[in-house]
Image (cartoon, rainbow, N blue to C red; front, top):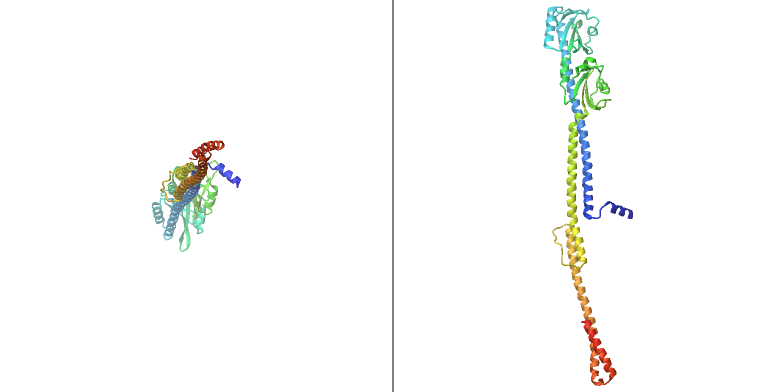
Length: 419
């Protein structure tokens, strides 16, 4: 107990207003800082979750646009193959149908109707030579009755393309193959349109993880694979998600991804963490400024509140010292109705009772002194009276006269002291 008291005395200052100030500051400032830190951390996590969710939604939307573009081309090719199946061997009508398809869908670079021997019958490029397609994988797949989409390749003009092939059926029998080269430049436009900030971008990877659409076209021409190996693995396995990725010798990035399952491709969106959370950093700084300002205001309020609370105590100490010196005239003007007001009222009452007790004590002492003086004076008067009565009879007695002359001055001096 003594140790705790000594520790308490060492930690807290001697003045009560300083003790009140420290206690108020601790009770207000510490919870304020803790609460502010928790709120900032929660808001930062919430912002990160929201940003990742938004990026993932952007990736999903972009995936839908790319898939819709490829799917619409494939559906158009199937419809045209169905039409060709009803035209028998009329080359002119086949050519007209194919040219009309290429005009309606600019995504098709070159369309060709191929017979079962692998020779082109007609193409959308009028006046060009006809090629033999016998050994192409697309022809073989479509000839066997399957639809086919090739891997992405880059043409001599540096434009990526892929080959689609569908069977041409007549009465449930394959009578030929319709093959088309699909220009992926339109998909580039979709991917290139996804940009935000200075570092936010999107890119498209094929089934091998190669970049086939990217704002930096050099990466496409070089056949570069994405540096986000885990992300590419996830998206090619059919997963959709978002995460923070750290790559060696590069800034951490926020990455979102979504697969194009029908093609085994994937859209990936990335942005540097620094830029993505730039507004979050500003928000955090503003929050701390607000917290520190609140702490400063709380300290000022605590200071004046401690002064206000200790002021009556200080007055009470001063009044107690005066009371100890016998000053009973001054009393407190009470304007408060709280415990401090009750304390000051009790002190005034105590001072009045002490003043009354002091007066009574003085009167009592005067009475006792008067009684004692009267008793002494009475005894002295009796003695003087006795000597005076004996004086006529013994005025010739020298010893009596000598005693009388000593007694009278002594008694008179005693009266003088008593009075």
